[in-house]
Length: 390
Length: 196
Image 1 (cartoon, one colour):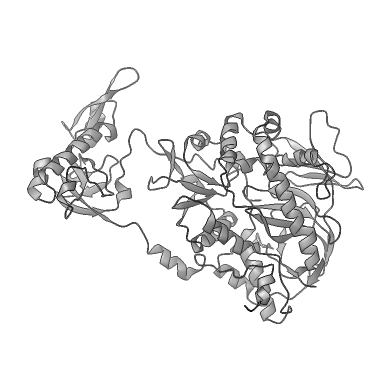
Image 2 (cartoon, one colour):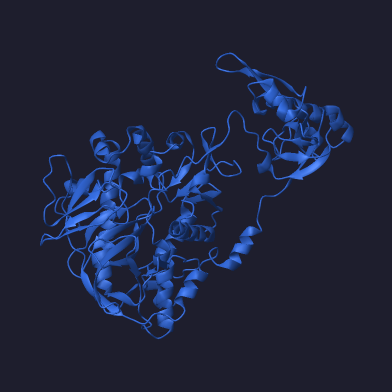
């Protein structure tokens, strides 16, 4: 695993905007960053990332059924009691799931360590599945990268296949929060792949979803029988339409049982079930009697995204915190396994890299890399492409 | 079979976009909902005189609209408010009562909308608008626009009696309650991104 500086493609910004990737730069700071790429060996990809991703995925899938039946675990995960039966049914009916992303620490040798699961509303999908794929094709065409360079990135193929095979009601609706450009980008990309797979796709802003006689309806009051929602389950179960979710006959993507996995509480549950697994870090629920956070530990809210409200204390005692709006819940603690540090020659600065590993259905489908100037990866962290080259 | 190098690659064989590029957006905009044939009449005799549906079908559609009328008509807690919207002498007492036992008022039915059966096999005529996507329903006329037939949700459908064409989704009767919106997204304002 190496970080290699490279010249940017001449017209990539114009091209990004042409294909709807309007958030390539955020508040004047780069989000998509092709001033460098990461290079992996095929062996690193297959042995250290692909296989552990599928193993970790299988481990959490094996726990879902047990959690749906355990009052203790559902309580630890802060799942509202009203939704316990709904979740049990969602799992036992075998409601299908589409995708997820696990975040890993990996430095090129030794086992990758699971930081957390984004199994409900993972984003950076377009950047991974499409934009970094095109980057590699372009750089091969430009003679910058050799013909046999490859990428661990079958995301586009696998999501399109999944849409072709999943039993989904038609038309199938896609919703995201109104005026959120990044989320809309993700949803547009999913709709694009679904349309290519033959799904009759419709977009509706989340706030426009209506309720009529205990059924979700679109702006023409037509029933929404299937819905992909880029909005966290833990919010949905608290909002005005929570009761309608249980009464309505709407098939949701991701399904309700994914609520159990996209929750930092799954980390201590996993550690308790598979102690000392090479791809897991020690993790525990914080309780009122927990000692103050010590050196070499990280504290994360049960529900948080993009690194928000994460505190950590390095092995040398330095405290690093990320602000955010998720301070209203409970916390888990996880042993610190610092992100690997690389040298960003373009900015003449140190940079830390985190690896996102995608799962479509039940198979590993590629990786994405996020870089930050700190040990906590945030929504502002840059996205860098990667290649496989031996 | 020739083994291609691509067969062992770890990346997608293709990554194409069809909707996110501007050209394809035009294609999408072209496919809206189809318009359907329907008919508007004040009463069943007008309907059978028009000869588009036979008398039995006209009577069946009128009866279906009348049955739906008390369920879908807009409701008022006093007669004056109802007449403000629908005109003096144009309101009647609804079968419903308030929780305290008070009267509820609604506009009188001024006509009906039915799916058009023209060209259908005569043996189907006893069924209300079978095969039509337009739901048979009562129509009303507002005080300030006595020439226009409107649905219970105030969608204008016709100025005159006879055949019309419309999009079925615009005339879906809503029984009982109104649509509520905005039940999701309350926490959107307080948080930046919802993906992760």
